Amino acid sequence: MKKAIAIIVSVLFVFAITSVSFAAEKAAAPAPVEKKAEPAKAEKKAPAKVKQVTGDVTAVDAKAKTITVKGKKGDVVIAVDEKMIADVKAGDKVTAKYTEADGKNTAKSVKKAAAKKAEEKKAEPVKMEKKAEPAAKPAEKK
Image (cartoon, rainbow, N blue to C red; front, side, top):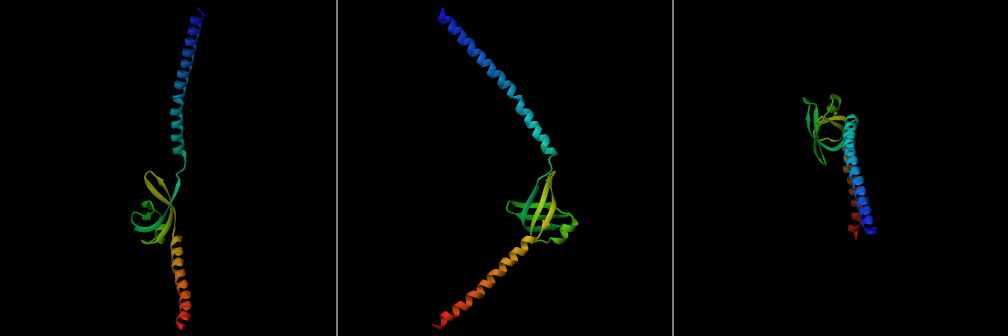
């Protein structure tokens, strides 16, 4: 008789634990759905992230007021205002900061600073070559 009571109590204990775990799973399932809805609202309210691309200007469209910059990840078409488009020509190296909204990239700033650095780097090796030539002349005297 004691064995029968022990078996019945253990079976009831197993059913009690099982029902509690099923109840917890059902309560936890709706919570992630609500959490997913909240970030979607936050994304709509959040300001657009500012992106940056550095590369060569491949095209300038004055009528559409856009420039195309060839960056590391590919070509990016950016809408610019009249002041920015006046300073930029095809072939210039630029760094453009822009935002993306409704599938359209709008420029915040366009700078041509990278082109000056490239010119300075080209000028430096010429100076090094001039220093190397006088060293070779004394070797010819021997």
